[in-house]
Length: 198
Image (cartoon, rainbow, N blue to C red; front, side, top):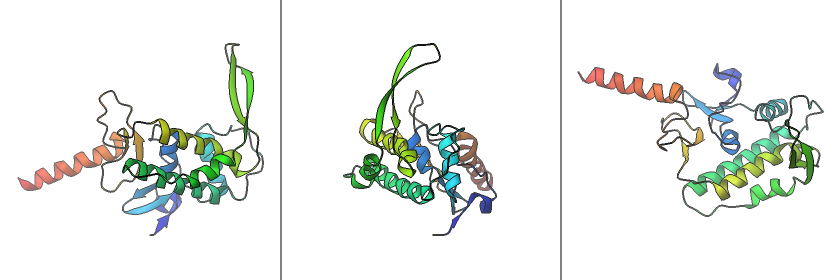
């Protein structure tokens, strides 16, 4: 399979955030453009920037980026893709790959104040390196696998799109990763088909 970086694809350099769930946006760091797979992660820094955009890592946390973040991020993405695809198909999910990331993510409780001065009990990562950075993503994937209504976990219906999303619309009839992108491409193709038939 030929995989391009976003710079080579002449597309945006940021992965689309259309999944409406952290685990699905993880899968969407790989997309398709004109039949070519586009990987939005080419460096450790690309992964860190994605984690910042997702709110997993704070933007001001500019410590040294782990040198294995890209490798570990891609491994986690593959494990989550396999688990979600298998769960969506109704098969038994292999949990070892995801458990590896969950077990490498030690956390502890932290009591802090919210913006209004109230108290919040949260959990914070206590490890170093890629496991700490990717741990919240692995946990989000595990929660999706356990708690989600998988009838609402879908892939875009456009034949050239591989993006995933969680359908949170009121009618639960969402078909496209983005109406502005794949929905309009489908409508344009249907219009061309009807115009040529006349």
